[in-house]
Image 1 (cartoon, rainbow, N blue to C red):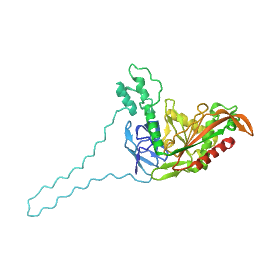
Image 2 (cartoon, rainbow, N blue to C red):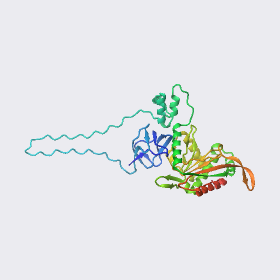
Image 3 (cartoon, rainbow, N blue to C red):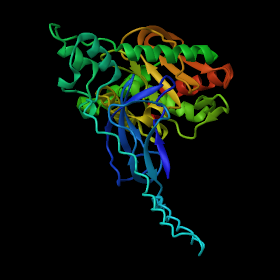
Image 4 (spheres, one colour):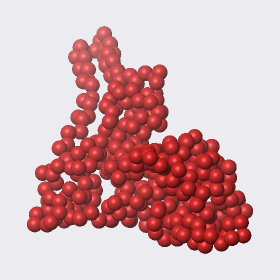
Length: 394
């Protein structure tokens, strides 16, 4: 039997609010099953169980804000019997008085100690900490609101919309998420000795490949240039293994056999998250594109899984089809590398001794100097560039 505790869902997470249980006592669970939903500064995250077993007891109430490591439930491992309830000891019989002593009445047996009463049920509505704080500031009775979050949880936007005499708030960056990003990136820049290598890469072969492949296909079946970037970075990380894994303070670099490629996704309301395509190395190019679409959809709906937020081994951040020419990113701890890719630009380029117009992108690799050096980073970029020249092999 073990205690299932609040997991850490990122280097910047200190606590989360439990907004939904998806299991109840007596349910059998298997490793990887989603058992609860927790709201963090980065949105609602689905929490997975890490062992097979049976849920014996739920320890945390909905709406509770709990620190990382706080007990959530008791899970009984398969094959183990639940602990037997402690039996009250038999009352001791009074000793036989001596024959010359006056008769003594036997001592009455002590009744068993009463069990502590279970905690009273609470009608406290499920709401994020930010929503409660804002409701107090605006004088909104949070118990009268209908939440739009997972399981009906009340979010900050629900409070803003219900504020008396206030127009409906327009979508704006989430302050709590910005604080979380600021804390994580500040810590990353302070503790990770970053170094950077950049290379400008001709992507005309990739663009031509996509035009041929996507011709006549509906939009939901087309592959975007970003999928080629993710695929090339994944294969390069599998070959240059020092770029793929985690740096743990008391263990050093821990390489990963699987490549779980994080994909930086901008939220419409503001902020950025980078959930991982789990085992991206085993995917085809089409599967990579489908996985990226799924991640974007679930990220913006607030239904990511805990493993997707914590088990990424390298991250790709691309500016898309338009925008700045180059980007230098900050590594997401505990990862050791981040691939930043600018938008394609048309530039004069030398091809077979002739100067011709070509679409190029600038790749900037941010790497952790505790783990790798310039030679290894240059090798990663060379593998990436070679793959982009042969998009049919991705």
